Image 1: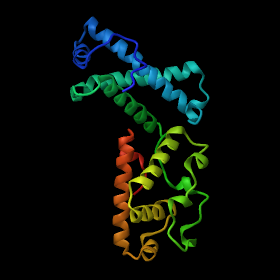
Image 2: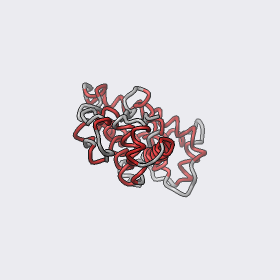
Image 3: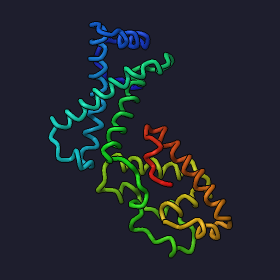
Image 4: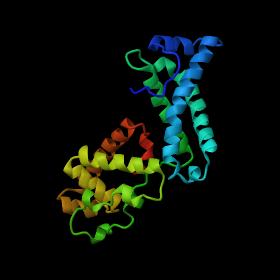
Length: 230
């Protein structure tokens, strides 16, 4: 874990936990202050990085973006305090805290409806599935960085994660079923003869694909519910 944003007192994992749980003490106050400064370093960078492509943030000046980050820090500190018993002392406490904080950021962006990934806009300019004489592949789908220029950065990031999962995590059959059904709006009955499978088998393949994609999203800190496919 790169802790370059940390400028406070050095503490071991045990010292962090003990200090943060020492209710009402100066030691607890100092630990929360140091941790808050560390989290702010990363969360403010995240907010600024996404601000140009998140409509709700794009018009804010620097001080307003800092206020957004400060609110996220306060929410993160409360969540860390609540979840501190879940920390296992075989890793890096600051890394644990940063993961919790970034989940807070994602939760808040999702709550404000800034992140849910609907697949259909990704391929709005693509051929209709009923016009295809073959099964579509990932190569037929526009690059999300090119086709999603008017949406927020987290949306783009999620789309890239989905693309990577399709390329790297799915079998050929799973990818074909998922792309045809979710990107081209083809029904299982339309897909089945092109794959020489039954509609039920197509449904099973796309369900398997969806689970693998959601696993990758989760590994990147996104809640599985953020992939809006049925």
